[in-house]
Image (tube, rainbow, N blue to C red):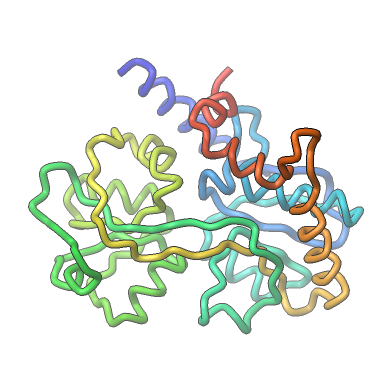
Length: 266
């Protein structure tokens, strides 16, 4: 219990710190935006932007000789800015039909799953997607691909929040009866919300299973987008002495809770 509370305190401090700029090297042409969406993008104990996708983006920047600032903000705000430009990049995004023509794309840089979660002890059982339509309210993250997908499937019981943390809190206080959560980032989001992950039950129906991409505003030259894609493709082939790719190693380490904890604690 003491360890769990320590984790909660640490992440709360990091979230407060994120009200200030969270950056990598100074900007020089491109604006790069991401959100707090662990384990892909988040802020470490030193207030640095990190995560599985962030390391991949940083590798692309290095290979293309590009310096850029990474800004952290809510997804809905980041999406609006990336669509307007100028020369704005946002990651990690699900390349949905609704978003396809809004951006030029580089990737994939990872994959993820979303499912419904209920409070432990809830009588709700979701065996197929349609079952969730009869639930009073489902908490979703505004602008998220999962929320957009459910809306496209004629769900009229969606309750939007600006963050996943806010949506999960609504589940725990009874405002909503289900929460659409990211399986890979469950522990992070739960701790940020002050929730013990053991108090959540995942429903068996997978709502979203998709790849993640880097999205580039339409005013970024095609030559730049192609250079980023080429850099990513080359990076995925780069092997260490043990014959494993650096890309695979990045994915593996962000699947390790001990490594994640080392980023959050001294």
